[in-house]
Image (cartoon, rainbow, N blue to C red; front, side, top):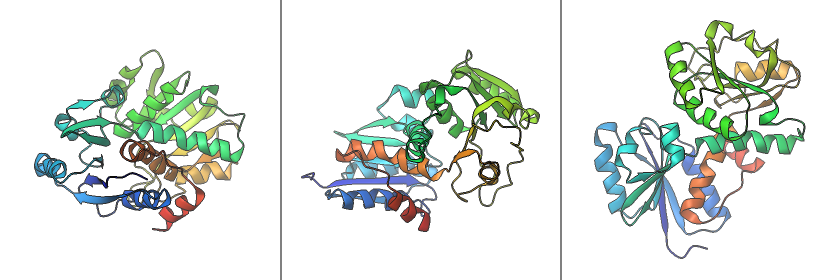
Length: 281
């Protein structure tokens, strides 16, 4: 048990909807750790002042969500190579008044799939098994592509409604990322090992993701980083075709683990009970 009281938080605007306090406080209780985790609403125009207040109040670290993941970079004294490549920070550790930033979204994405494959017994599937199709070229896509490259995906086909954004993102690894037209999305899945939706399409309150994956091979794996609803239109299609599929809720949970370990010295587990608890909240 940690001797000192460890104060941590998540910052964003708005922030009341965040499930992070539920996740972290469940872990604090499970591992009998002396600490707290709360949601702190900080508007963009007072981000600097708000972060200074957290330092002054003795916080040991905090997570960062929308709309601060990029703006927080300028307030950090140091960010690691992962955060630099992804271009965003979602986890900050405070040490001697200095801010150290990293990004755990790539970890969360990869481990959500790896742990699901382990739990389901999908031993014949691997990231290195073939081409990955990535839909979307926003901030979330950068973290996903970083994860895919680190997991040994041999080739990534990137499709985005705005071609220019996809071309820009492809510069992360020009030798492995191929940009194709959004209009090709229905036929490009024909030789996919992995299909990933990184857009907000299909999320509650957003337009649906207009895609037909009926041409996907029977051994493909399909995942969506959207978790509200848990089964998006894309995942419903995958389920209907008996394709392996991974919901997005695990990414939210797994991305929280490295930060919790940085602050509390324990790498927590994602259990079915925790998943059910978060989904019910």
